[in-house]
Each structure stands twice: as C-alpha cells, then as structure tokens.
Amino acid sequence: MLAITSFVLSCLYAARVHADSVSPQALATAYGMTTTTVLEFPQSPLNNSAAPFYVTDTDSWGVKRITENGQDLTFVADPFPNKSPNTINTGATPSNASATVLAVNYPQGSFSHDTGGVQFNSVFDSTGSAGYQSMILSYEVAFDENFQFVKGGKLPGLRGGPVQQGCSGGNQPNGTDCFSVRLMWRTLGTGEAYAYIPTPNGLCNNNGVRCNSDGFGVSIDRATFSFTPGQWTRITMLIRLNDPTYANGELWLYYNDLLAVKMQDIYYRSTNAIQSVQGMFFS
View 1 (cartoon, rainbow, N blue to C red):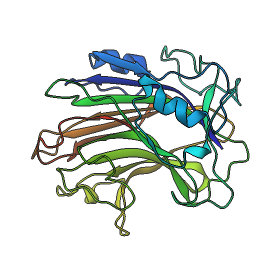
View 2 (cartoon, rainbow, N blue to C red):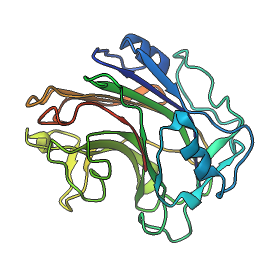
View 3 (cartoon, rainbow, N blue to C red):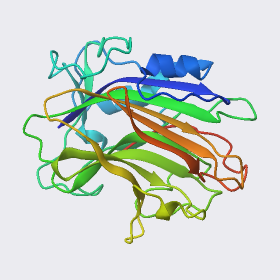
C-alpha cells in the first residue's frame, strides 16, 4: 500500500523562479500564482466502496471518472503520523492536517494497470481562453514499511492536451494531442521524472535523459532521489509550457523541498492545440 495526502495545485499564466530549496507555498508566491486548489479529504475513513464515489463526487478533486481500479482506493487514518517529510527549514506548512489520507492498495503479484494501480485525471483548466501556461502540483506520499518496490511504478504528476486518455501506456505524443509528466519509483525506491513528451530537439542526448527503446516514456534524472518506506516524502512539481515551435518549456521537481530535477528546454507542444496545463494525472 502507498498513502498520499495534502494535494495542492497552484496555477498561473506566466512567471519564473530559480531556487535550489523552496517550499511549495514560496514557489507559488514567487511565480505570482493566482489560483490555488486544495483537494478535500473526508473526516472519517472510507472503504473501497465509498472512496471512489467520494473522489468523483467532491468538486475540488475535478474527477469525472476513475478509469482504472477504483476498487483499490480507500481513505484511512494516517499510518505514519510521526514521520513527517525530512524537509529543510523552508517555512512549509505542516504535513497532513486532514483526518484521513488516500491509500492505494496494490494486490500481491500486480505488475500493470490490468492487475493493479489506480488511474484518473483531475482537470483544473482555466475558463480563460489562454488557459494555465504553468502549474504546480504538491503532495506527500508514503510507502508501507514492508513495501516491495520490485521493478517500479508510477506516481501522480501533471498533464495537458485535448486527448484525455493519451500520453501513457506506450501511446506517444505528437505535439498536438497531449503531454504528461509523472514520477516513477524504480528498483530499491529510486525516483525519477517520467514524461510523455515529443523529443525533436535532441533532448535524448542530454545528460540524465533516457529515451527508452521500448517506446514508452522518457526517464529524466533517474536516481537523483529515492523513497524511504514508512516515511512521508513531499513532492512538488512545476511545469511551464513551451511557446509553440520553441523548446523552452520548463520542468522543476522538488523532493522534500530540495531541487532534484531542473530542465528548461522541453518541447511539450508544437501548436496551440495544447492550450494549457490542465491538471493532475493520478497514476
């Protein structure tokens, strides 16, 4: 089982910041964020029958339907109440202030979306014509003390584009349909950013970038951080879209408020058919 809490999404149209250590709140302030969404959690635990309906029926989540394995979701009491993230003194708000956390159960022997793992999109797109050109996602995640990382798995990130079910599972982007950037854990709990993005600009030749030969996602800065079972970890991701036809998109990833990934030459889109960063990709 893994548990997740304290989802915060902040959105803006355009800004820049550069820091090696920063809290989610300070990052949003530095970027002049104009909108913040904090996902609501129930005050009491919910079993796997009630939890999926809570996610789809609670407006702050922005979820129309759970596309995979909703039966593996529950809301439970914090299993690690005394294991807050090992963050530096950045002035971040305390960890989980809600009564429950979201838990995802991985059945024994599961290895793909057909056998385990929950997936859904949370859409927070602006009603304005320009959409959100940048977005921050911040959350905290913990793995059971006896969790077996095995070969790897996905964690929530951000996505955009009109094709809601693309840019995962080997469905490659073309610059007009979608993009996604999630996290992955790998063997022994090492972490990375994991992206479905076009790579026409020589990105695959960059240090720390692995364009996987199996036709799936792009691994970015693998093993620059790692997850410790039985301990909460704070993840903060910022995406800023590129100007169409220019590889000037940005990805900033903070692990316990310390900078782990920084890229400023990403090609998320080729046209304005992808208008915005739309929201969270839970996977």
